[in-house]
Amino acid sequence: IDIQCTNGGLNLLSITDDGCGISKNDLSLAAVRFATSKLQEFDDLKSIETFGFRGEALASASMVSRLTISSRRRPRPISKESPSSSKGNTNCAYKQTYRDGKPTTTKPTPSAGNYGTVVKVEDLFYNIPSRRNAFEGTKRETEEYNKILEVAQRYAIHKSAIGVSFTCGGKKKQ
Image (cartoon, rainbow, N blue to C red; front, side, top):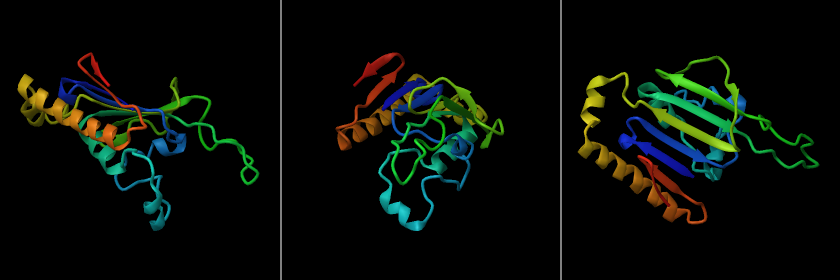
């Protein structure tokens, strides 16, 4: 997991993983309120094993920032039960952008990318000037940076087998 942060997350908060990715068909719903692709039935709640972003967090981010999600699915091994080697996109990544809580295009667009997902939150509170002004300033940006770093450190400790790196303003911490 690679986390990049600029100006306490106001200009950029980017999270990259090398996980299984989001299918092309699910990208347009990834930041829509009350939508999920991880749960088909109630018992699925017991089997979630990935960190992943939860739909409501992405939906909220898409309302107050310029949100972009890029993802490339990992191929699934061929099995006797499922002759298809993969479900969804594996040949290239797909990108979906959101503004004001809605996808900006009807379909995700093909893009270059590694296996996994990149979530970029840019220009946080661009559409709420009073909120953005409340977060600007060196002291406030440092406080927000420290909060983001604390969350990253907790994930790193909880899942020590997963590498976590954090970059803020060009300075990398691992």
